[in-house]
Image (spheres, rainbow, N blue to C red):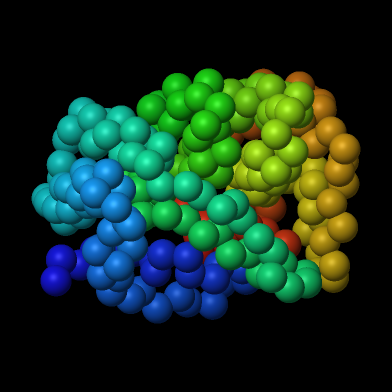
Length: 237
């Protein structure tokens, strides 16, 4: 049986704090095989991309250009596997991100996926996925594009997608910046600020900080209860 060994188990529970998550083997066909001929063909296509991505990531120093091309292929796969969105399972914060196989593969690519994911923000069908993934691989260059994507999502007539996208934006930007725009740094129940228009709150914060904000200059610890804690930032002090 073909298997995929992701860095973190797909759909693994990832909360605030930094307890280790044990990787596990996921049978590729258990995730990807559909119920009819069409879906099986789609699944095999995704499977080929994922097998390629895993082989690439195991290679010695693969080129950035090659990983960039792989990111484009994986982003196309996002259309073929729906994302249910992130959910908080407990208070103060225990996030289940429910990443699909292509999403996890993009996270594994790290910063090499950032440019392609920024371009994907204009695609309404996968905008929520691009946003949450940028929170895991992006830096200060992703801030303005994600905020603009959140502004666009504010007027999305599909309520579930709008809520999912705005939550993804809050998680992504908090993960990058460690700012307390939405959730405070202390413990306790994380009542969100700006529940009605989070894009406007992030836009105001970015207007004040864009000129000086750099990831390398962050002094605030990421080790607090309400921190999303995923992607390249997971486990940092």
